Image 1 (cartoon, helix red, strand yellow):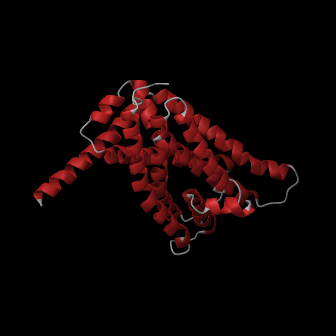
Image 2: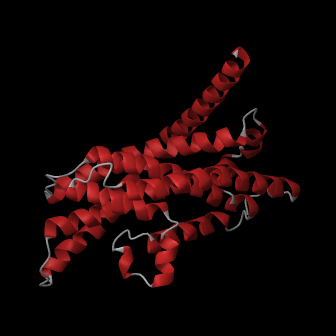
Image 3: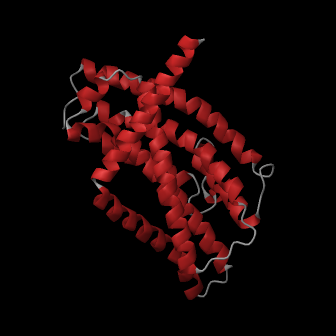
Length: 277
């Protein structure tokens, strides 16, 4: 019993070390992080102003509702982007710093390494997304009298597990292709943007794309969060969006760890681990 407790304690310390290490990297480049934060805010404003453009063009819509719908889409997309970016650049950043071999030789399970990076990505992404959401809501003077933010946070927490699992799979791309792997990871992110209903209902997509949307956790996260924030939906009302994300998370996290491990073996075997392209 004590042995199991000691092992568990070691794993938690290791996971905390990975989170702390990523925090130090953010602090090291804090001015760049601040610049990218303002870029995220500007990009979100660009999307949300579409609602004002519809009104200015003579369209008759509920501007407050449409603005909130677009804001939720833009914020969730920026959150997903941060999680993916941190996981995709796990390898690229290590190569750039010249520490990839030391990191991969550390007495640390690869699963703990990836999960620690994922936990940091979630925490960091939540802070940024919350600040953007509050700031843009205040900027437009949005009213959300029915908003159920507790349900929205639960949905985002469940979705985050799936995002990390999929992010782990894309993180393998820079390992097997040092030259263009990182860029191709963003292609996968863009495909998720198209099918998940970030800025429009999934129902407007062609049938084949709607089928693809069913395996994207962002589809369920966006639909559930919009119901919670716009209509005050509770946990029971959005359960139909929660359970698919749980299933996707249960499958994607172990699969992501396995895929990354296979990519690591391939990179070591073919001498791609330290290559910078």
